[in-house]
Image (tube, rainbow, N blue to C red; front, side, top):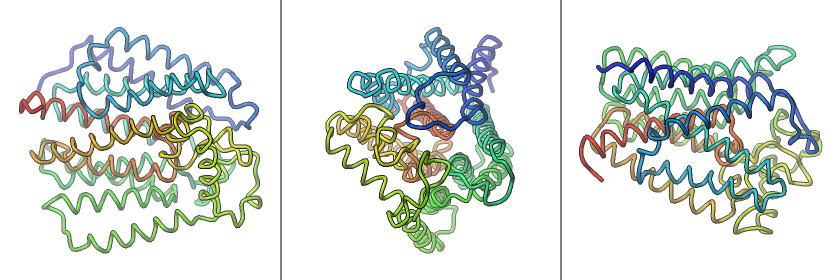
Length: 400
């Protein structure tokens, strides 16, 4: 196994520190805002903006790392966020839309660069990648607890940190179905599986439970080592939970601002919100309202996200943005199946984790809006797979 040079170690840990600082800001240093103050600046914002600007500076110095990925699906996600930056031109809030999209593209590039630094060895890279996911899950969970006035099982409900848990648990479960690519890999993955499941259970989020069950179904369907006799039962359970989520009669109180639950009774929760957003989308179908503003521009209910990532993309960037996303998604699916054909490292784990991430996007718009901690977890999984794909498929096999 090669070793990372001292210079690259300093560079990678600098980027990691800035990413962790950003996550700390959005998990611990959180304050509730209404529709009139969500764009105002304070000391917390300065920490957030400062970490992003420093990351951007670091990336410009070492841009040779992230420009190596060519003709892969992840590039089209970068294009989507670039469109988000440009959407400031037609957004109701130029600075907010452009900055939020800039923030996303910088953090995605930072994740790519970070994984690229350790890509010389799969064992080192995967362990490094899983430790970062653990840190994000840890900060997300304890950041949530730090904002509770009292701790009880009910107060731990969230649709944030359980998403990170679902991604971690799904990746670990998928890795357990693969062969032992290095010593004690299965033992390590069992620990991460347990940690991810603890986050899912503690958060009591049906969306994350469903996401993990879908990941389990993916693993059972594609791994010859897993027992497929339970596949049908798991699909039935997943469908039942999915119906429960779609027909939820309320929206989490920590997402909605300036509204009482009594105002939403009988309006079918998320479905009511989606109806409002779709009516807005009909007004600007081609280019949307601008990146990350549609949920905040809704006059009837102010919320911090749309609770469905496709509505986030369509509402923010219109059919143009949605077309870019679907092109990226289809290309990603092809890459996943192409990679699996050769049973390269993390071939099933990546499918499971990305599957869970997209399914969870049906309960929270963390893809296509401003960056949450769980967004960074998604970026890391996507970056890790993209770099594995690049080295194993393009360079090792010479397949284009």
